[in-house]
Amino acid sequence: MIRRTALSLLPLILATPLAAQSITVESLDPTEPPVIIEQPDREVFSLSPLEEDLGRVTSELVTPVVTGTGAQLRGLDKLNGKTVDFTLDNGYSVMFGDLRVDLAECRHPEDNAAGEAFAFLTIYSGEEASEPPVFQGWMIASSPALSALDHARYDVWVLRCKTPAAESGETE
Image (tube, rainbow, N blue to C red; front, side, top):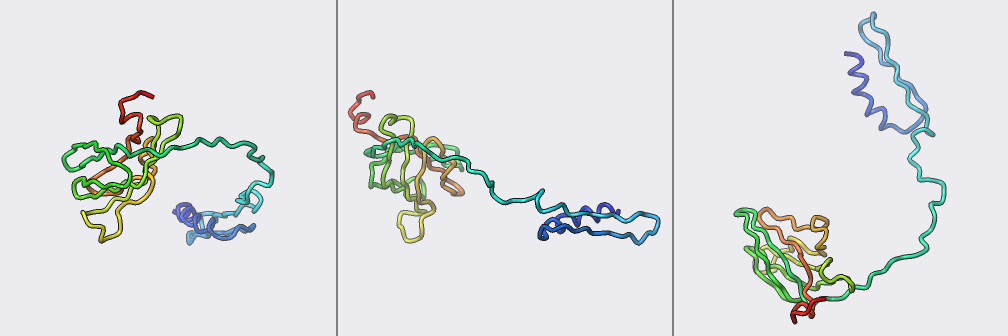
């Protein structure tokens, strides 16, 4: 019983400033020996940043991006489990259920138009933008959960950007 009490006090003891200290927990039963809890020294549990230099960045890989003409998005109605794919041009809106999805711009890497897409979306609950948006920001096709719509009924995510070559039927 006493040991459990002493262990329940441990988080309170560890929350105090780090200094060498000891606490003696005595029992009302004289036959049990007292429990002594000692706080470790400050050097052992130091949370200060590393004192050594970890090196410097000497090169940086920059991938040029291209603005696409629009984006292909996918919407999920969680209530009935149906998905809908819709294509949207930059600067246009589409209604998906009770949501109004506005696409400002879709960007993709210059060398990989099909593999990655970054779309800036603003999503409103309802046709009018009278209330603040339920989502506003960049959605990334390869990491949809990184910046996701938080809605009880609908999910919307980016599949790819529209490119002039894809619209004309050419292969890249």
